[in-house]
Image 1 (cartoon, rainbow over the protein chains, first blue to last red):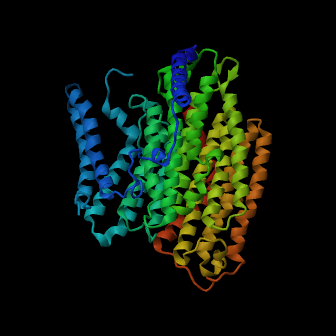
Image 2: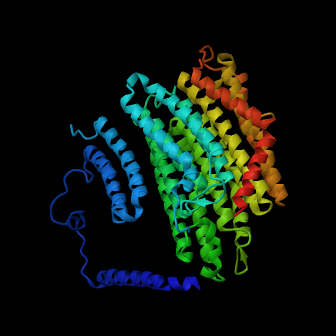
Image 3: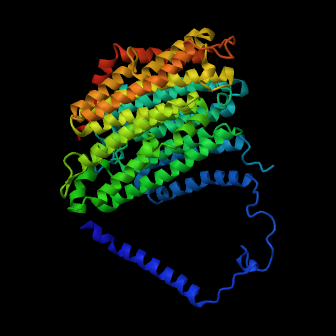
Length: 119
Length: 497
């Protein structure tokens, strides 16, 4: 029966839960426990936290990350094609050409729209 | 799989998708090089291009109905019918957007609509779990962007964010369902999965039930089935109106096409695991969900004052009616699938008409309140007439197409010996009549502060209202039987494996 094949996964899950709770419970029971203001602060290094936790990041970084995806995806698809390019022959070359063309259009778009300019 | 792969025999199966890609590239380049003053023409290029592509599945395709591209997509008549429906919906959406002051002049808008259509048309024909997921995401991700398209409007951003969060979560659950199916059988093809089940799970139906439920979560989100409907009103209200129209028709039609195909192919009537017949299970489940969906949609619609929210709840209720047809697939599934397809076809035109009316109204007055629609018949009789036809169709009153849509769905339920379900659906339709007729009453009888302000129809909006009204009337009279027969023929193709 198929479900029995999942038994090891279940066992592992159970084991993980047990180990984690043992560690937490034992240190709670036997360890010293003196919470002070300084200790419970988010950065337990004696420094008073300054400013909000979430900083404002220039939105340009997101844009750069998104633009990077074009080239990222390109490489992901080029790689398997390059490995099997001999077997795929001319048809494969044509298909990867079409793929590159579509990416190229995206590239032209981001260039023309000024996505590459930092300022 | 065949030993040698002949590219040219496989090509016609995805012709609409290829042409959509080409159109997307053309639109993108037009946006870049067309110049600012020609931006508005991009809408017409997209609309005409999409309309032309909508015809291609009918005239050009492989000679036989089977799976192509290594089992990824299936070419059959029902897929073609849904593709035509989706692409026409997209075409009318582009035409509608041409005069929208917020999105109409942005070339990217049309590009994203075309890409979403590409995804929708892929899932209408998907025959493999991987293709289903890729198609669904190709549809969903552009829709998240479209919902948030008015960047400086808070409601629009909120709707995009909500849509994304709900969508990402339900996609995740559905993907987990897929992974279970693949884990049990080692198959991803929809048409071979069911044969691999008995060997994989022996007598224990439990894993399959789990997978089935997870699949329903994903599809239920897309069609706004009730436990997963919470995003619908907010997204419909916040998104730009053309986007709302698109989400309510094309995305919904594609998802129902997928739901029908997956349920019938992966969990067929012959599949009995242990003592459990899985089809009985999902039929019962879908029936209950249909009842809940209809009732909640209709009851909540009664109290709406914003026309877009009203149409959102109405669209939940309509999804409930379609689910009646899905549940009725347990016997005479030809008829039921055909009734679902016919309903979605007429719903495409109906809802696009209704939303076009709302768009023009809110563009001129800046209001989306139902009470501000007072005196619309005096401000622009043709707009009021078009809205009336669309709303009558939603309510299911002849001669509008909604009557035959509901008639076929409920007949399917009766044929499948689900008389109680049909009765509940009819009762729901009566409840719905109230809030639909109120809108008509407001337009023709009431007065409002905008009463003296006349509303002008531009050429493109006139086309949208005219085309949809004519299509609705045609499907409600002479067109009903021929189109239903066509859909029935397609339904047979779905089942012929």
